[in-house]
Length: 600
Image 1 (cartoon, rainbow, N blue to C red):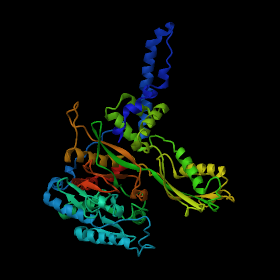
Image 2: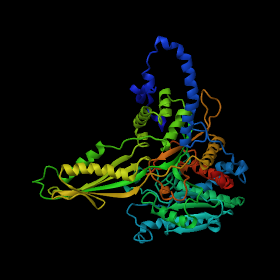
Image 3: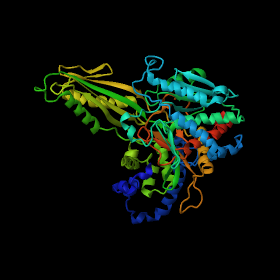
């Protein structure tokens, strides 16, 4: 992520001098004051020791970091004292016969094309007769046949016909439930791309030479869904683990579209358990780990940017193309597009954004340049240092929108005939809202830009049925907000975070043995677990009321050659599927033993 940035290119500016302004304007000492130097030094030392440490500790307090590190290394959690049979972890990861069973389950799930389209309506309401929902019913039948112990021992509920909720009831009602989620639906495969796939997208083919499985949904996210079910089936077959804490699996059916399935599931769970009564929710999101500057980082998405689709239309008088006005409605909306793209949202970097925690970890645990390190560490107390870090992040598209609201004009429609002036033109702007911003602030931004163009060309303006400028004889703009979603609450780095992160650290270092050594350090460096901001949205957008501890992350050693999500040749190394099962086999047993009082 940050490792790909061209540091020399970004730092080769006037701000290479990283001292605070006061250090650049030191006055020379007069001769008759030189005898005071020792006393001044002693005074500064005392003040710095008292006041400086107070400021530093207050900064840490505001960051909610429990010790004097801005990026503490989480303590590993050894699962051996928690789980029924530690040897089963090795069995899950290495047994060939078991892998054959897991492969078959995974492959067969891919063969059922649970594609979701944006125009598919509620499967219980207007869309009940839509045949495109049928594969979801086939998928349900397949799961019931494939996981007999789950369907025998767990409570299985179908929410709004197609949502799936599995409840493994714990013996202690005082313990808050944990919920693991995924989604059944996959992005459609365009027929025109079929000949570009190395194997048919719904075959679930495994290439034994490369160790990859290819097919729609292998990454996003049947890999996770089938892995979770296989974990529970394995625990039931083992018949030793008797959970005290209720375990819930929840699978929506339209995450790649409206996300209404998860909304129904959330309402159902709130009616059963109430608000803020879940210990943790873990969903899809970031995956695996990244090696940056010879250190391994696990980025857990602890927050998500907000979302807004802005539909902007212009209605104007028509006529023959031989006698046009100076600007047609297409020309005017082009002016608006130019206005929007010429006035992007301003970047902002505060400690509210999980990216700040990432940067602290980068500064504290890797060998980045001294200038960049200093600017990062001072970025929350020095505006100039903050600006320099923002410039650093803005230098690459991969990191630019981690700290800035993005805007993209994705759809435009208008005109019906070559010799007829367009009477109606529409466009859609997709916006992903920064953590520090809001839907209201975003709408105001677009409102102001539309007003500029409307006044310039004497057009009216209506915003969500509210008249801002009365329509004129020339016409009017109409701005409608669609699917507004505020930025997600950021999950705190609390005891819940430590247990999840500490378990992941043990998983990578001690089970998968993926720790690295460097030329300067022959010992194994610990994995660094750090928060991350997701620029997209998952089904967790519907689960905010259930808990404050929401993590969007898939465990596993995922090959860098995996990819093709939402595209041609979606593929992933099949071994990462076993990793999911191995991790949750022991994590569910670890979290079961934790007393809820430790989370308060």
